[in-house]
Image (cartoon, rainbow, N blue to C red; front, side):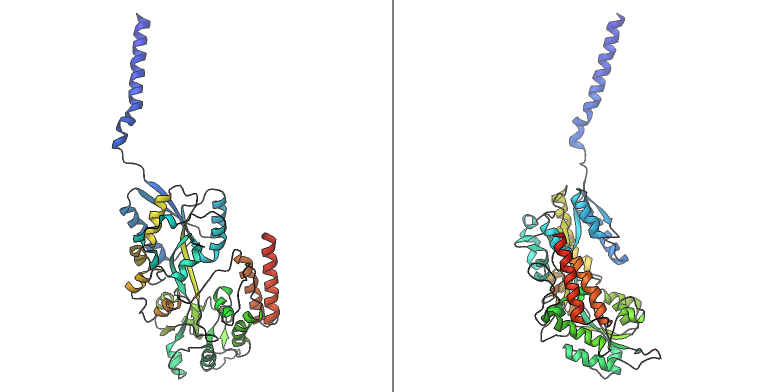
Length: 423
């Protein structure tokens, strides 16, 4: 009797446990599915950029309730961290991809091709072609540029009036002449109170100068070629303004932190800067009366640089359809309009630039006009050794430690030696 009773109790408990275990299965159709988590990585940004991105991501989640976005800001050594994670299968689903780093990753088979995701209503043709091609290999598209800047000439209108100059220069010959008139009397230390032009001695800002007389920063194989005679002609023009005319100054020469500071502190009357300088000058130097114009033509050719960053998708992303929805939202017309409405960066969609009237804005229209002929900042699969070698040796030549020809030959040899070592 007792054993029969115990067996009955055990059977009842077992059935109750089985019933409890099966309960979620009976109710599973009523449960809300867990949202997909899309991981997005980028780098640190200004407070304005952070706020805008947070607002965009919040709006995206509200309109896509089945998706949550987890944003990670990588503050230091962004590309090194990203490459390590891509190799180790710990990379985000979507991430920022700078144009200068794109060639290496596009050839490394770690990026998801985007062609199959793009529908007609996404209107890919609306993007600036010169920016979109940066993230293509053949017909395959690997990234969607989210914003951009070109370089333009900033000029101090008050300094121009004092010097009797009516308009900004249209050619480098005019710029050189104007810079002499704008360079004021020297102080006790021998330096001018105001220089004509501020200079950033970086390859990132000078590739269009190399190209002005038919030169190239890199050859068809991806090796540095900036020491060739055609490349030297344009760069010599820059060096002469600094070494011979002494109408040009580096930020470090006068204790400034950047070209924007040189302009704001009125240590120079002209400078060649990107769109980031517009809000910086307006916020930090509200009394400064400045204008912008397209970079003066060199050797009869228009030229400037284009800097851009794309959203790219990890080839091994865990939630590819959801990752694409995020990319499409951020680079769609509504998302891009909100992202670029403050003016700190420019929209890569032409329709958005027109909607925000940047193509007619007195300060931003030169940036927009320049994107059609700008040289994208992209120098092959191995940009780091090329940049480092050029920047170090070009500065050495500016300081008079060696001739420009010798300096750039050494830079070219050093960069190519490093490239051969890693191929």
